[in-house]
Image 1 (cartoon, rainbow, N blue to C red):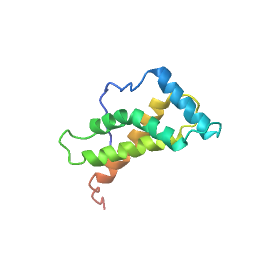
Image 2 (cartoon, rainbow, N blue to C red; image 1 turned 45 degrees about the vertical axis):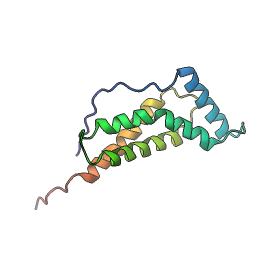
Image 3 (cartoon, helix red, strand yellow; image 1 turned 180 degrees about the horizontal axis):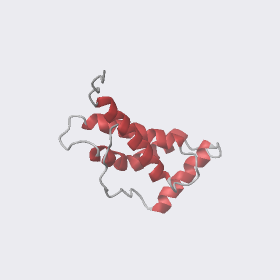
Length: 122
């Protein structure tokens, strides 16, 4: 089993919480079909708002000079996209934890895929 140690890093606070909540509210209403706003555009805005957090987590899980850095960033972004698309609540309260879990799960799967196979124990 691969264990990923993630140092405590300062989580990025990309916007003021009031602006963040307005964005989450707009996304919720767009998904419900109650506005003419594009759901995809709003999801993209939320994704971009949390992208620095995802990249920080990716960088924290790999060696500084690692050639796997682009792949780790890609996996972190996929985890974040999964979190954004899966979050159905009207507010963002709790989203950082939800997204962090999704990102770390994706990164853990990436490091397990890259680790050498265990020798046969026959």
